[in-house]
Length: 73
Image (cartoon, rainbow, N blue to C red):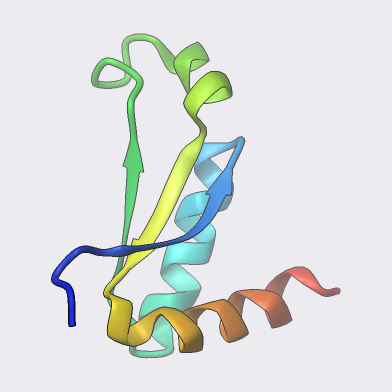
């Protein structure tokens, strides 16, 4: 199995990515947010590359299920 993380979802807003990260972590799924916005100095760069939410490949299926329930409302 690969050590590479799995991309779960790409968000257009950092706040949404952090909210999803928090939900995953509360469910016991370690997650992290990856963004390229020059260390926060160029937040508009998030619009082109998005804000990515990643987890380990072993947790990917469970994370997708959790987020599906979160965004289905």
